Amino acid sequence: MKKRPASSPLRAPVVRRRPLRQRLTGWSFVLPFALPFLLAVVAPTLYTAGLSLFQERLIGGVTFVGLDNYKEQLSDPRFWDGVTRVVIFLLIQVPLMMGLALGAALALDSARLYAPAIFRLGIFLPYAVPGVVASLLWGYIYGAQFGMVGDLKQFFDINLPDPLSSTLILPAISNIGLWLYVGYNMLVLYAALKAIPSELFEAARLDGAGTWHIVIGIKLPAIRGALVITTIFSVIGGFQLFNEPNILRAMVPNVISTDFTPNMYAYTLSFAGQQYNSAATVAMIMGLVTAVVAFAVQRRGMRGAA
Image 1 (cartoon, rainbow, N blue to C red):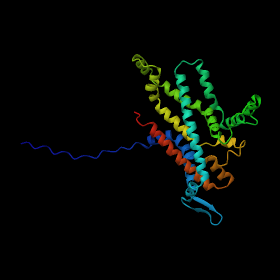
Image 2 (image 1 turned 90 degrees about the vertical axis):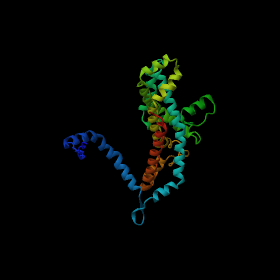
Image 3 (image 1 turned 135 degrees about the vertical axis):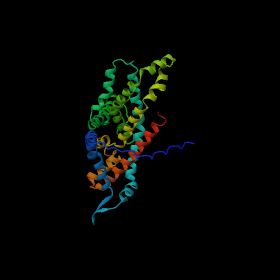
Image 4 (image 1 turned 180 degrees about the horizontal axis):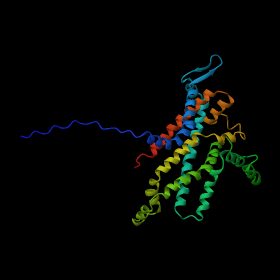
């Protein structure tokens, strides 16, 4: 009976490190993004997080207080009132934003519009207007005493609702955001629609699918990623609400307070109250809330995607 040859011992794989020049070449491609990211995002975030853990006192100076600033802000009703307004604002604006942007993108993609270039430019053009200018423009349109609403009331001798009243101020601010950003989201969705292979539409038409079947069965599933991204951007922008209420506050100071939104509250704490540590705490809380909500929207939106 023949003996089986003894198996040769396993040899450890030889790990060959790439030359230093190749490794530095790879880092050189990352550096143009990494360096500004570290300076403009990571460093300010770490500095803000550090500020939120300290407190300046009359006796003792700057003192480490741990999470006391967070406990104080989370128990402050002014902070929660601002968060509530932002949540209501998001519930108003985000569905309208996505519905209008999606409808405009589908209309452009249908190739049934007359002068589509003018239509596309007309919707996108407000995005080129700075937010401060847009807030001033719409503020004077909303004015019941000095603006277009007031002129219409006087000319037609009718009673019109005041857009800058306490009950309509959030829809009025939401309208400014819609006017500014629907065009941007429309272009993102339109670009995603144009990337769908035309063979899918041809095959669906051969199978007898109508226009709405193609939209629901092909187009919407194909642009799910773009829909999720634009929704996340809209949510993040909503949590950062500052310019519009801050500009309109000069016109209706009794309606819009200095703590109308969390960002306005942090701004007031920092520049009016010199409470930099409390302002940093509000900024960190809102940053964490925004990140969690954006992550939840992404997970929910991409569930079931291939």
